[in-house]
Image (cartoon, rainbow, N blue to C red; front, side):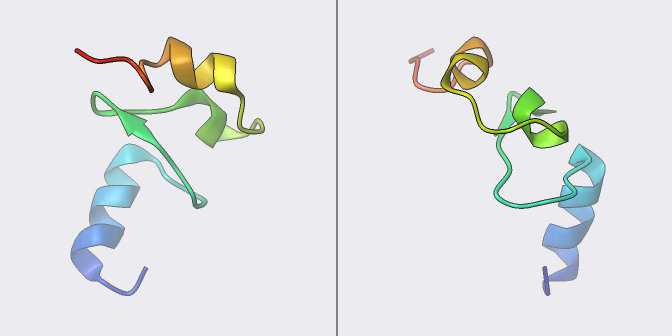
Length: 50
């Protein structure tokens, strides 16, 4: 991340690798160590309208 503003925001969310998904201000569970998983993303609200 070359843009310092984006790098700082990523740091605030705890992003350590890309791609990463933030839902409602929270880093999706898969982003903190485990592999991408549809069930985990759906539980976080990805793919559902609010």
